Length: 363
Ligand SMILES: [Zn+2]
Image (tube, rainbow, N blue to C red; front, top):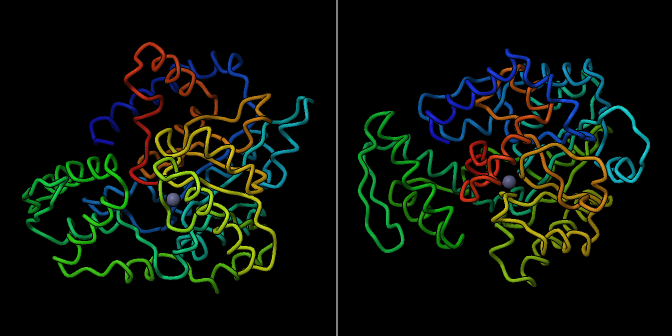
């Protein structure tokens, strides 16, 4: 998301909040609960050039969100409790559920202490290549290469492109000019493009993976905590919709089976990599049921609506985005109003996907 769009969205959310429009419209929006989506947790402030900062929040912000949802009357559920809650027609307090994607080490170091202190459950979805040290964190590698360079050359779909990346502004422009075409091309080719770029600049992708994500021993330490659920996030963290059905099924089933084998307990929950409409659709939602997932989460923006039991393998989430670490935005989002507005806007303007402005760089 561009800096300008971020500022516009922040202004719109603040306007909704301060005018009280969110409170006026809230009763019209009939929601059952919210599944929060997080990635990294670290107390360090973001660097001037750090486009993936949107995937990173501070422990203090998480604590503020937890305290807010508890004081606002939300009941905090584990993933295991969600299917039954959605089958139960009785009106109850809304629920909240906290989930982390990708298995970053900081989940163990910085998130766990907050959740333990507050006695709140959470889930972590692991792509099983990551703790094996084979994770391809290409979006972070691209950021590292651009951050450390003054100029770079990239082959984008057969066209050799040169970028000046000597200033923060130039780095931001270059990252966006490279990142979005990569997201649009077949994923193997996108990854190969970043791998070649990284190698040409002396970066080691395996080292980045070992630096940032948990080992199996660390995941077992986390899983031993009664508050923690470990879910699956495929083997290679590929956009499933872009794979043939047999490969997509294998990515899902193998990652769940591997987690069961490593942890010695059932793995019943799944998160679709990237998780947007282009990465997971009805075929994947059915596959998740087929391979035995009790729940599966997308990155589609929204709250969980009443009567959504049939969509238990297509749960939307609310991203706790590093660019929106202000409890006012979370309060406004929890009314459901921004999502209703975006849905209405997208119906009017079909070429703009709902919630596009909040799409994380990589989920
Ligand atoms: Zn992910």
